[in-house]
Image (cartoon, rainbow, N blue to C red):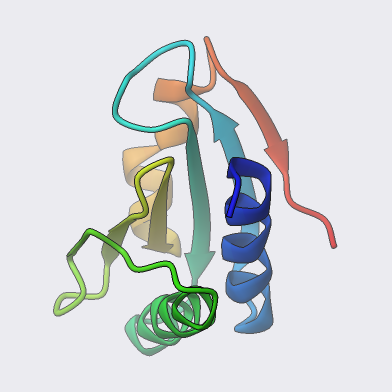
Length: 115
């Protein structure tokens, strides 16, 4: 799965569980940790987990596994590491507080996902 296919599959899986404000930030020129950040929001911890579970399930069907998952138990800010893509699933309030878009989009290319 190439970078574009990976990012699109992640965004589609998040959208399927009603994630809001799905944003893709190209950080490839800023960091070696990943090429893309995918950031999305949920209204509750249950929805955060549902989004993460669906991303994992859909990518697993394509033979892609996350190398690391952090924050799942608390379900306020979950990070799924897919190598070329880091997925950040936030509860709404936490996304506003941490504001990753402000930190990373100055040098990267940010865009909203649309199906």
